[in-house]
Amino acid sequence: MRSIAAASLFLLASIGLAAAQPMVAGPCLDVKQPQPVRLEGVLTRKVFPGPPNYRDIRKGDMPEPAYILRLSRPVCVAGDMFADRMQRIDRVQIFPADADTGNQPLWADLRRLVGRPVIVEGREPFGAHTGHHHAPLLLPVTRISRARAR
Image 1 (cartoon, helix red, strand yellow):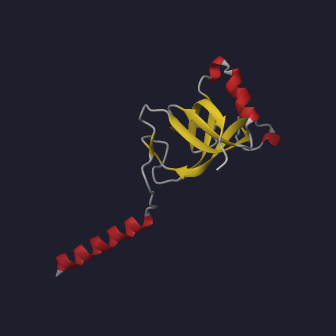
Image 2 (tube, rainbow, N blue to C red):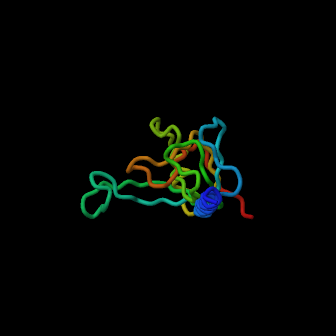
Image 3 (cartoon, rainbow, N blue to C red):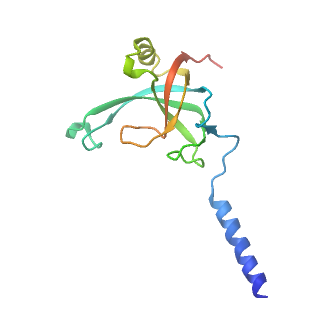
């Protein structure tokens, strides 16, 4: 009798835990895989507060402009300790993959395409893990183009 009660309790607890977990449909973007990543959405640009307090530009924090891709379809991410596989991500911070070499044409394309639907291609996405990261996922991009109307 005691084992039936314990088994019933275990079953109820398992169902409760399963119901509490959000379900994610389809495969997740595995950031550990070396293949290029292609995402589609609307490109936005926002200025966030940076150092020293990351709270308010009007109170002395440095402005940190960032390009944010608002995804057409949210994705889940696997393979990164800073990205929760169970979370649907709808925003990705993007920047030129070779930003330190001053990729001027890609920077110009980013500025020109703000507010428009775009397709970005990049490599080595990673989960946000510092105060300079302003979306749950970051993607160094190698190419951006305007998306065709559907």
